[in-house]
Length: 208
Image 1 (tube, rainbow, N blue to C red):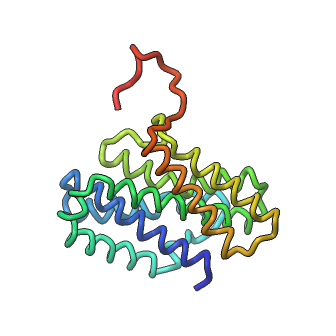
Image 2: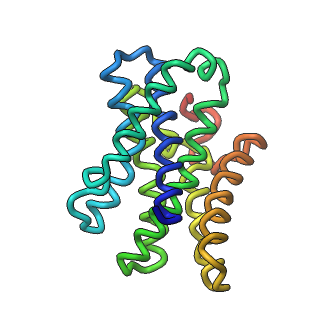
């Protein structure tokens, strides 16, 4: 297992737990919990693979991915009471997931020979699309469509990725540094209440 596969696996764990917790919070049945965990972990990667023409899709060729998601659902089930009590748990797992999946998407784009800007779009897609499906299925407005710093963090992390590559730093430094950038920006935006400018006036600002 190479370094990018390790990052992908850790990202899968983070997003699977994020999806499971979202399903627990809505009191879904066991089938619903598994589905939400799966689409959260696999949604972005599935769209990425379709866009760059990978057939069959990555998770169909790697049973480790499936077993990991199922294990995360089981573990989350046993510790759900403790995890759900911590209001920041879902946020933290989701944030770790977008940081790691951004890097995976960027690397996959480079391997496909795509332009750096397209790679950044692919990184955002990989990181954000699973969360979009999760939020829609549990009847929430996806975070990416609100004023929160979410996809923006992925874009900035992608910029750091290519800047570090320009300096020919080893990938063992580039990958973690880029992922940490995404995670740090996302956390800082929430802690310090930094949001994207709203196109609405105060009177017509949509309720969150």
